[in-house]
Image (cartoon, rainbow, N blue to C red; front, side, top):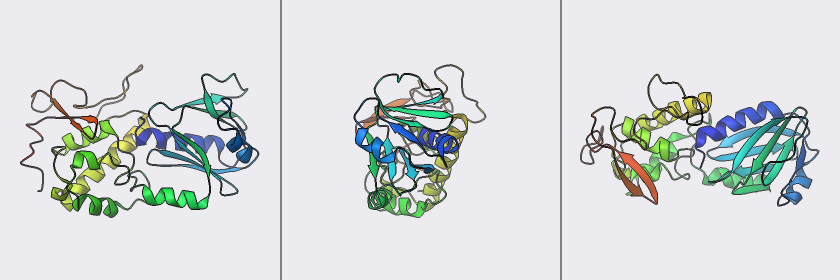
Length: 265
């Protein structure tokens, strides 16, 4: 599943390509024909990201709501139009650009009330200017659930996925099984600021970069990470361990992230 930086990068790029234009909207696959009829011919006001959700705002307050899920994919194309590749759920066509979205988990047109409800149930997004980190801290500080699980809960903090979760906790020396209630405000602020810095870097490079002063790699694998899916800790050279948290594999260094001794706790 794409992490938050991917969605924010897409929102930024699509806003530049489509905002202010009347769009032609199609559903080559056929599963979004009703929604396409509602939106086609209307002006796209803006495109924004909320965690892992993409929102295309149209002039009538209709919003195209996209969540890519595990298998969704976005293709950016230039006109003239070419034949769709794969099962394209929705195709957005502007004056010079075409956006194809394949296989999203959510692809729907929602109104003002549904959009407000979406914002209400999603936690603060570290990349949004209107984020309120205090809301996330209050949820975490009252919880007995592990910080490793809470960081992946999109109703607590939006946009952080498994790779960022692993890397942020390692960078801050926090064991992923540390209960949320043991995370004090100083520690939370370090987590929040690190997440904001790393995801912003991800938007800039269109790749997850958590290693200091590293640039994205070339070719298919562009990420630069410290311990996610690695064998040894770059700090102490101890073997990287892994454990399952809420069905997802978390990586850690038990020497650098001891459960009994967490920063500022």
